[in-house]
Structures are given as structure tokens and as C-alpha cells.
Length: 216
Image (tube, rainbow, N blue to C red; front, top):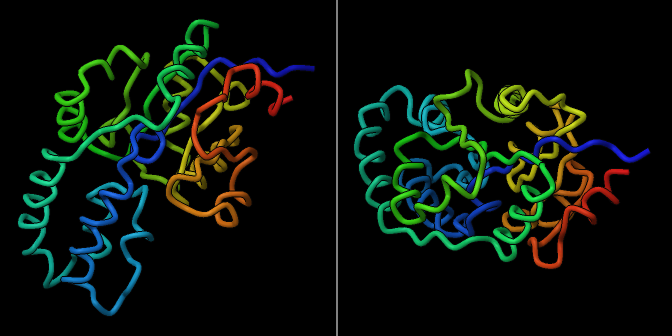
């Protein structure tokens, strides 16, 4: 029997926008500066909130550097380019035209979303809702963010699909017991496949019909 799909929940970076390569450059520079002993740290922290990153990696003596890092991040985000993942807009419109609710569920804060919407003001009307780090108590890989998003639409986890790219995000969708689609924009197939039900490179030639077929 075909599952009923009520809500599609999208991470932001690497899922809605092709921004992950840019963030890898920024966080790579900061991690090499402050944690040269931990190569590849910029990939481990993907999907985490800024507070979560700071609590774990900019604690103790490095706490004094948080303001400087935040200022650099804000300046970097203000000049970033926000290009949609190929086929995203057509796919989201396909979902909504068939009554499926859509939301962005991001570990980014409201300040970041406001910056994004200055560059892409149509984002607020493209999706039915946007949840930021201020809307949930626990960060990914906790399922809290996706469970709260489902509740906003009155949907059960079994009636939702999650679109994610980061390891923490994929684990969050899994923990929420939702159908997880892994985007191959940030991590390779061998890393994404064990944490997702379906893997796609982008949304080109993807549709609600193909999604429902995979979920059946």
C-alpha cells in the first residue's frame, strides 16, 4: 500500500542551496588556524549549530576567540552566493501542488536565514515554513528538529520525508524514524548510503511520483 506523504523536510546548506563547498573553505581556514592537530575537522562539524561547534571546539582558552570567529562568519555569509541545488525549485513546487507541506529545517540561526533571504527573498514563499536553531532544543544528530517540524504540520514521522546531506543531518532523520533521502552534495555515496533510504545527486528529473515509488 502506498504511504501517505504529508510533509517534506529539507536541510538548508547542501540540500536547498549549493553552499557546502563555500562553508568547507571558511571552516577549513578556521579549523586549521585553531585546531591544526585535527585535520578534517571542518567536515566533522557539518550539520551542527554554531553554539554546538563553539561548545565543543572553542572552549576553555579558545572561548575568547568566539567573537572573532563569529564576526568572520557573518562577513563571509554576507558575501556568499546562494545557488539552488539543480532542480530544487521545480521539485518543491511539484510537492506543494500535490498538497505536500514543505519546510526548511536548519541548524543555522535566524541571523543566517535573514542574510539568506536578503539574497533570496523568494525562499520564504517557496517553503511553507522555516525552522532555525532557535526553534528546537537539541541539535542534529538529535531527531528533535525534525520531530518538531512534523508536529507543526500535524504529521507523524511515517508521513514525512527528510532531505539531508551531512552525516549529522542524516542521523537526525534516521533517529526521527522518517524516510531519509541523502543528497550526494557533501559526502560520497559510501558514507551517505548506510544512513539513508534513497540517494540522489540533485533534484533534476526527480519528482513526487518517483519519491512515492521509492517509499512504497
